Image (cartoon, rainbow, N blue to C red):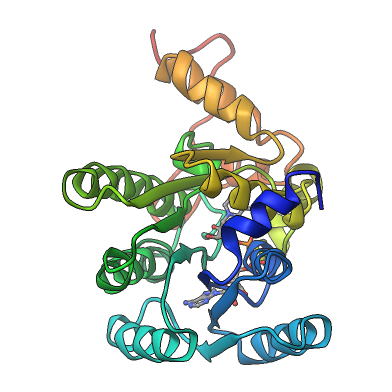
Length: 299
Ligand SMILES: NC(=O)c1ccc[n+]([C@@H]2O[C@H](COP(=O)([O-])OP(=O)(O)OC[C@H]3O[C@@H](n4cnc5c(N)ncnc54)[C@H](O)[C@@H]3O)[C@@H](O)[C@H]2O)c1
């Protein structure tokens, strides 16, 4: 733990931190970091075995830890209310809610991707965050200080090929969270709202076979590093949290480059990712056209 650990501990000790998708990756790292900082934890995941294993690990290293854990599918709106009531009852209060749970998209071009999967990605990534934020607000607004933290992505700032479904959900998280932040500023300014744009983090999010090259080339930052950075950024009230492999590069590019150039550069990024065949092979109802040398969108 770095040198700011004692001020971080002072800040987070006895605060209750709720983390969705805590069974793996960034969510698991957040749970471990906040346990080290002396927080009480409310954890959930759709994967019961992963959640049980995490709680066993936490209890082994922090025997006095107050932790409430329960299986929750974040896309199930109704279950949020009973989950929060039980977590609040067990932990005494809820101070920080981190809407972290998320899934990858189809890793296909928009014309080839499956509509049912698009709905699932939006339901988990976007509506899971919406339901979590709305259900948590009454608990957060009761507190003298609180934080709502929504996890978007670098793909909430730039949109390379084969990410249309995932980007739709992550850009939506960004828009929703920025608006909510402005709204709460008017009525509950003590509730901080944070938007996280992770870069490539070394987790299990890429479960598809065709995403493994992307994982190898891009997901390089360890989850603990971003978890510590998120904790520090909440303490410092940093609204936009950009961290992880390639995150700053993507952030700067999204701010300074015209869309025309962003698209061209993003198109080049798929080279070596094993996705080139998607742009050589016809898809159901969509015929690939070969671009002539020197032909661009402008001519
Ligand atoms: N890993 C990266 O490089 C990266 C980059 C940008 C953004 N993110 C975002 O960070 C967040 C965490 O991802 P990760 O990389 O740790 O992935 P991960 O797959 O390692 O962990 C995600 C966890 O969410 C859980 N989950 C999935 N669907 C759920 C649901 N419906 N309800 C509750 N829990 C559910 C999974 O079981 C898993 O434990 C996601 O929102 C992801 O989009 C990750």
